[in-house]
Image (cartoon, rainbow, N blue to C red):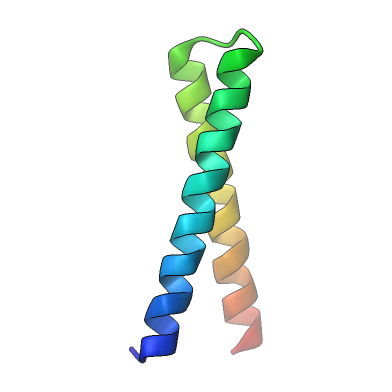
Length: 60
């Protein structure tokens, strides 16, 4: 992998982590339990990464 590809992947992981944290904190603040908030955050992260990889696959 080239340096640009590695940095792009790290950027995608960082964005997914930030989205997961925001979604989990928002869910927790609205009254969801801890487990549900974690699952909500994990779903947000998985969605963000799947969109990134789908766009990457369509580009190549």
